[in-house]
Length: 347
Ligand code: FA5
Image (tube, rainbow, N blue to C red):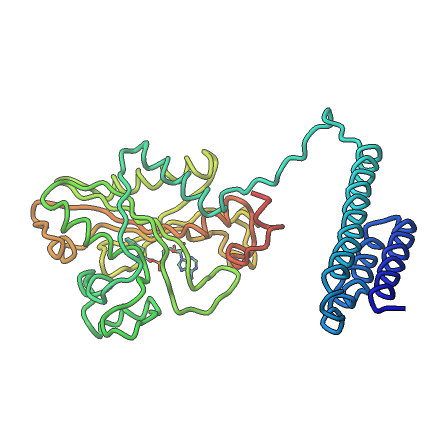
């Protein structure tokens, strides 16, 4: 027998056995295996192509043509079955996974405002009603604004009240309180009267505990005018406490010391845990401190450009996380920034 007859016979066998094998294919995985075996690189029909070089020249075209025919037939049969399997799979899924368009949709989880943001917004609202404007200054401050211009020259012992994060640039620090904003506002507004709140994050190199964080929010208050008195300050802060904590809440102003106010005070709220009887949260005092305040020191007014003979003012600094602790009966400040969703979604 000639090479031609041999190869033609072989191609017929290849085609037939390929089609027979395809008749047994029932799913897409088996079809994929069949494709590799019968049309892949080492499939018999492909082997014939690679042997064409050895076929005498005058027979090559006929055999090549027949080989192409066999390959195309197998490809066509495979494509037809593939289509049929896909259609069957679609019909099966339509039959078995019917879509009930009348079912109620699943509600996606909603994010919510962080409890500190909620508290801040309530505080903004109370002070906005009293006619205060919001003024923002930067978290990175100069030593001058954070201390010197607030009546704490270099080496003043009162600087130790605030443990400071220094940067690698001499004289540049992370603000330890929002009070440097007082000087920025005064420089901007002088000689106009001032009634602003200054919210922002502050940073302290402190021991972290249930009541103290190394980074927390404060809202500063500053009022400057021609006849501002300690009575104005007391009225503003007591009114604020009643609006935020409720009419029945007991609060008190206690004498204190800040270098940038004179006289100075701190405001306490009755301890929410023991109701004033004394417990570990309030260190047995019955009271919890929420803010520092006082009449703006004449040196600070002067540093801001205001003549202390003509102008007076009061300032206060509120600790926002401490206020949120009190309002929501939370016993540990560390929850605020741990990002535990079980805590956050309660508010
Ligand atoms: C100050 O920061 C002053 N600048 C406040 C002030 C402003 C006084 C204007 C007078 C005039 P003090 O360090 O006490 O003061 O902080 C103010 C409030 O921040 C505190 O009453 C407390 O509520 C909160 N606070 C202080 N330290 C921490 C801390 N480590 N973690 C969380 N809250 C704190």
